[in-house]
Picture 1 (spheres, rainbow over the protein chains, first blue to last red):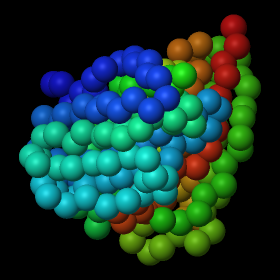
Picture 2 (cartoon, each protein chain N blue to C red):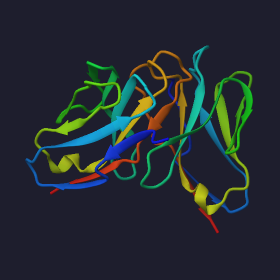
Picture 3 (cartoon, rainbow over the protein chains, first blue to last red):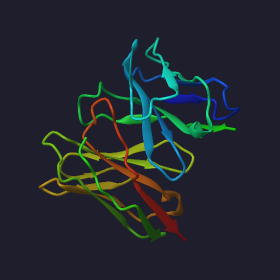
Picture 4 (spheres, one colour):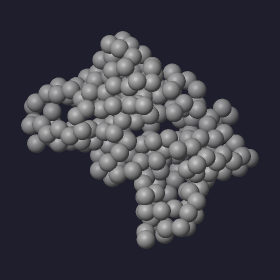
Length: 116
Length: 109
């Protein structure tokens, strides 16, 4: 079972460049989300989606765009990369709609991004 | 999502039992308690979930007292490979599941 797949695993960008982090899941989960994790810190929610065509902001959405055209894919776009966006990015899907309290998150292996 | 409090870090030695306690005084009646484990350079992974009393699986046990205002994750006979960050979450969080800082467990030889 593939679960949640993220690509690329590593990326180096120059300030001002744009790029897309890919995320795909094969569990038919409606809910997907993106987190960033800075060294020694917890995860911070960037954006989430409760289904195709529906997205919303998390705690730290500035500088990032998302769209959800299919159930399987949830790409994260950096419009103009900044050094402050150097971080590890995790995509997650969830086995529910965000209503029940026993839902579980399934995470990808992460993308380590450095912005110079 | 109920606020949780857990120790920032813990040290242990191989072969010992490790207990990590999470406080959640404002847990709601229908809230489940869920623990995740995160190894370095990996995403968190679900390890155990419970509502009341005791839950055990192949990885850990979860003890929840009758008032449910706290819970304890128990890792039996830890090894070096159990070095990780452990997160306690209470409730589903609605659409915005927020993770705290977690507990950094360091297992020494």
